[in-house]
Image 1 (cartoon, helix red, strand yellow):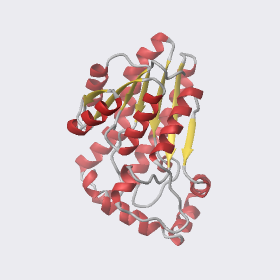
Image 2 (cartoon, one colour):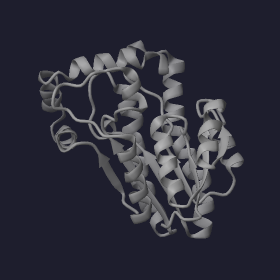
Image 3 (cartoon, rainbow, N blue to C red):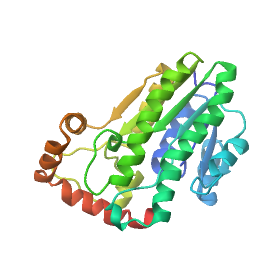
Length: 263
């Protein structure tokens, strides 16, 4: 799909990854609508990129529905907003579980249902879900995050099959560890030696390629990280033991501690 002149909604647009995606699609000539909870920061990004800002809290019941109504007619929706779900499930309160499900899973589904219906009527459009390699490989102390991201992957793949005959593309992007911005960077966790990262711009470039070429799934991570995720799909128990030997437990513990107040 050609982004030039397309009307594009990006959720979670005040974070570094969302900003990078917004800049990339704006550079392609898209008319951009940015969404986020923090009005002041959202306005700053929108002013810099010549975009329109729509304040929305996707954790609030009805938030996704209102966002679609406020955003207007759309050609592309990029569901980027997410809450961290790291930490032992027994440490989560029930409201925290509800928030993770609402933002990470229900909101993208609702956005796809409402905006996707209008795209299907026109026979043109694209839906993009910013997922995570945690949607392919499970790890300890991340049950909630894995649950939402695995669910999002299954939803997107099935939706792609449903939307194909309607002229609407569906893509999922799977970042690994992203430096300088995003939930991992804000957590302050340190990675074991040899585990590489990618930049927000790498994620943004993958989004643009996925839309323009209608690519189903794209991993954005160094080769060893991608191979590790693939191995975890085949042999999850063995992969968890190997991750433990490589120091993953320390990283996961640091992530959970650093993201505790972001739930």
